[in-house]
View 1 (cartoon, rainbow, N blue to C red):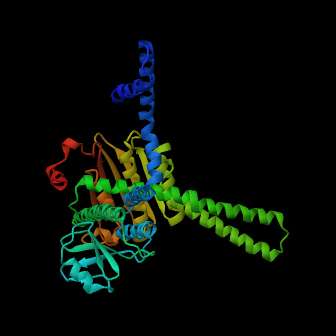
View 2 (view 1 turned 180 degrees about the vertical axis):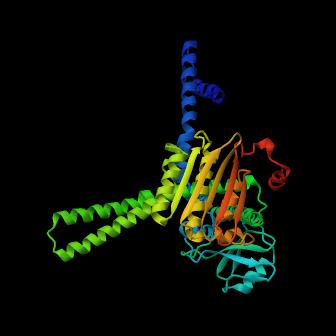
View 3 (view 1 turned 135 degrees about the vertical axis):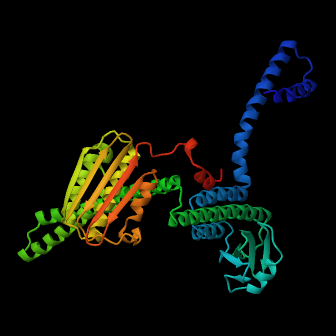
Length: 435
């Protein structure tokens, strides 16, 4: 608004050169008219300028849109192969080139993961190119996109299909996209390194409790997603075909042999539908939040007895219902894994499970009359390592008693306040975080 005050007197002065007999009131009216007109023009300039820039500089606008699209794809890429696929598609689409790919250079062995133009590539690589710089190698182009102490990554592609050279805008686009790829690869390497460190600590039973909780929370989210996808896709498809088969049986006159064969197919559909529903149930127990832990455990026991043909005594009389959601989920998953392990390893026909809540702890007791095992054998051979990690994730305790031929007894104690707050993280956890 203030900017329009500057050209307004100039416009009035020019106008007065052609018409000098203006009254004071006319000058004021003309001033206001010119001033308002300039304000409107300046406000509209930005919008019209944006529209005309897209028309006049279409190529540059197209390259910018491509960068936004590529950055969006990179944000969802979790593997280097995904990044390579996106960059191939983007370069082929925008620059109209062929044979785009990412090649690796191993610094320690001085080898390139490519056979074409290898010697020329090596000569260029020795010159230590900055990120995004474009060099020609025979009939190919080479762009350095980053690396680490062991490997370097280069974007390699052939010339344009119309045999024209890359213009300035296209070179700048390549440089920008190289920086984006470099950042994406660095992030993937950092994540892979962190995952490797976590797995190493987990294998050595040294992972902090908060790390285990994080891993199990991620696992539960994946279970939930898988269960939902399975229910909404495979299960609904099976139900649709089952109903179509039922309709066909009702509406068509069939021979006894045909009817018997289709009835067998119908029973097969029912078995598949039941198995999918059971898988969804195991991944995401439907009654856990709606009806509580006691109801969910009872349903779990009923299903396990039917599936595995052993007797289960479940005692939840002294289990409180007001446990927090995380404790409820851990107790349910532990009971679920104990029953699955019993079916796979124990050869038991009678199992006792008891849950009770004391003042500051919830106790889960498990006992079976199965084959047992030697206590010095690694727990993961009998599927107990996952249970142990779940218990450790909430600062709980797990006690195992077993001998060959004497069955298995397991006592698990989950503290009422098993989760640490930010101020209560111990020194070991702080060291892992880096704080």
